[in-house]
Image (cartoon, rainbow over all chains, first blue to last red):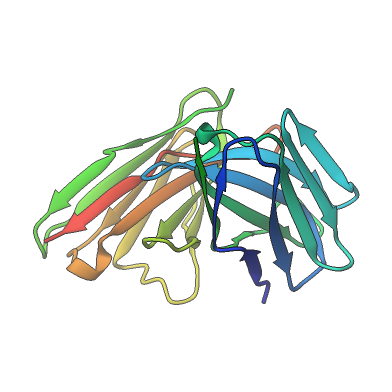
Length: 114
Length: 115
């Protein structure tokens, strides 16, 4: 059974800092990995999707890496802003097809203070 | 972009009543829809997967008679919580997968409170 763990559970940083969120998964047989953002009481917004054959993806100030063999992914946020405050969820899609189930980590609660 | 809506966004009901939550894909056809449940400060747990025109597939431990799922069209799925109890209070999120790209999009969630 796939298990996804995110570290740290919570993170508080001053505005402007660069930061790294970590995600690990137990079964390396994944189809892809996705990072989401969730604001309080809201649904999920997809940030980055990395296919199993890829090593990283970038979007603006966000960079996500994937090391499938070691079961790890990191989300790097550059020059953090108060608007980045949210819960960040990592999810892996199982198996060799796009129809596999998504398994979510428990999230990292990020607070960026001015 | 692909948008998934949910209605209602919040609902409060008395114990013993039934509540229906709608999930719609607004600008795409979704052959598959998913229902998740999220407890405070916890992650999303998949409850069931529904394909248009067929019965939903429930995850282990999810009571199919309590959480009725109907996926009658390519743009609408409903989750009905029957005979709701306070322990059913939770945040329910639906997700829809596009036929063309297999990408999965999430709705804004429904906060259910059972008194």
